[in-house]
Length: 233
Image 1: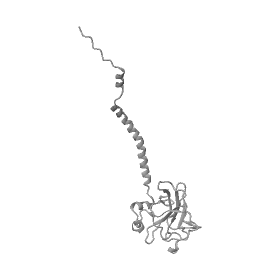
Image 2: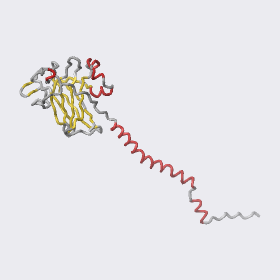
Image 3: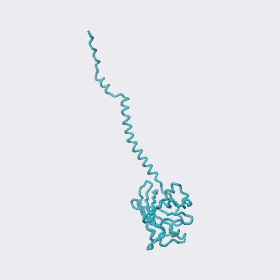
Image 4: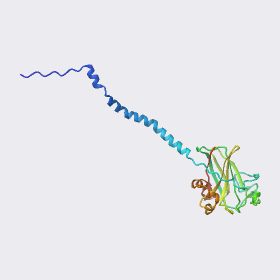
């Protein structure tokens, strides 16, 4: 005669609770992915913002250079953006050039209301200045100034700069904001053979040379040059 089957051991409520509850190691393992995701959500934007902030702070300021001896002793009555027209006189010499750019601060914000001035010699290498014998052509304005707009842009009509004894072609540039003078520098023509022999250009670091040396390109209405300016405001 076969023996009766042994009864299965009974399980009380506590047994079922223990079976349903995760162990400490299982709970910790489940928490790890959630913590990693939360950390990524917090750290990720911080890393992106940090990289963006570094990029902005790395913006190179336009290097300063000497004013030189020929800043006007007295400003001409006609001192607008068009250096090829002095009063009623039209200047026919040189190679007509449009010079434009944008003035920003170190963070890249347009410097609305800033004043940009330029001055340079005529096609024969003469300035409107007693130190140069006031020999510049009377029709050449030689100096101009404009107030930049809300977007920081400026524009001048002038001539492609020419060399004279001891200097490579260049245009003098000054930036003011109210009573403050923010920058005085010089703009050079990319590709000019005389640059390498110019004592002021030689003093600049490679990065500084790149910042103030720009291409002059031929267009239908003359030459075109773009000179962006970054100042500490």
